[in-house]
Image (cartoon, rainbow, N blue to C red; front, side, top):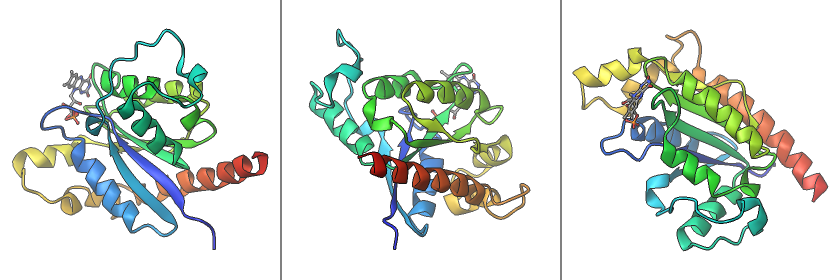
Length: 204
Ligand SMILES: Cc1cc2nc3c(=O)[nH]c(=O)nc-3n(C[C@H](O)[C@H](O)[C@H](O)COP(=O)(O)O)c2cc1C
């Protein structure tokens, strides 16, 4: 039996009353029940990450970070076989806090796949395109399939703030938006995660 694929789900918004916690908790719940997956939600709000201010690139640090929270954050990323980044769109990009959290690290992402979940007026598509360019520089492997949460879903919250995550995100699974979006996304992410893990293990 194959070892489980360890997926770290990164919540990229730290804003008060952020929407991002909704899809993050929903994905976490779905993946906890996913066969062959060991999922953990990483909330960057739980790490007191200072602004990146070192005189050198993190590539030079050999995973020894000068700050306890940065080390804790990096150690969590290191455990991963794959990542899911959940990001809103801020000014046609992604949040600065997410970039700072990414910039503290580097080897932890190397040769691992990264999938994206986004939301916003065009379902966060512009933020995801920018993030794909960023993770390539980390020698990460962005996957093509993504989960873009549209206003047909986010708009439902305004009229019904107490709606459960199961009901809110049901269209992403039940085929009413054309297909089971989470299933096709996970198929892509897991295929890449297994292939890359095998290749990393062979090299080690
Ligand atoms: C600083 C800021 C800039 C934003 N810029 C955009 C934008 O360019 N495009 C967009 O679709 N939504 C934009 N929005 C709306 C956000 O996508 C929306 O508020 C979303 O809920 C933010 O995610 P969060 O609640 O998880 O932080 C912006 C929101 C903020 C706070």
